[in-house]
Length: 109
Image (tube, rainbow, N blue to C red; front, top):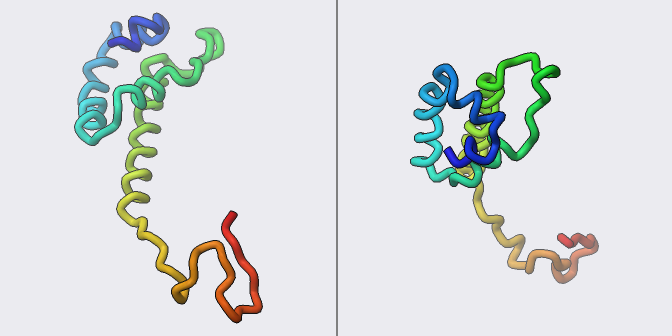
């Protein structure tokens, strides 16, 4: 609710209709999954919403879409974290240096 307190345009979307009730389970799953309150706040209000006269969707729909984007990004981040493996040393050479006797040069800078 601190988002609504500091961003009245979002407060209107959360206070009317069922937006808050509809999105509460998703936000709860984010928090249980380790997504910080700051990250959720950033997803909701980190970018400005279009002015009312330029909106093609309700503010409630925009809030829902931003939370869905956060869900997608969180899932992709989890997948990347699970599939990442530390690089193995190449023939015992230090990363960023040329292997002794090697004609090729390569470096990570």
